[in-house]
Length: 47
Image (tube, rainbow, N blue to C red; front, side, top):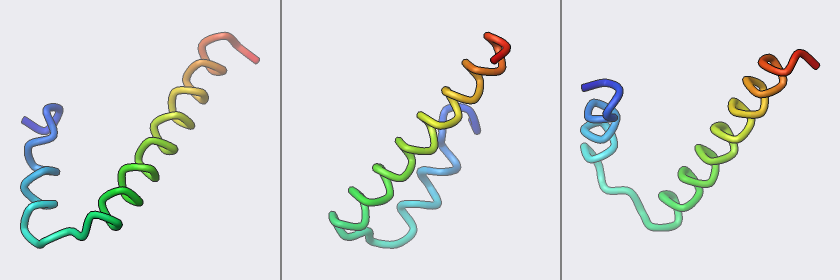
């Protein structure tokens, strides 16, 4: 259930989130995901 994001979604839905806050959060999550993928790629390639 944790991998599917169920707990995270339940936590997010406890309170109303303004659309602007949602966009900002999703953008920040996208940046974190991209950085994490880049770190893993570099580690895998050995640079």
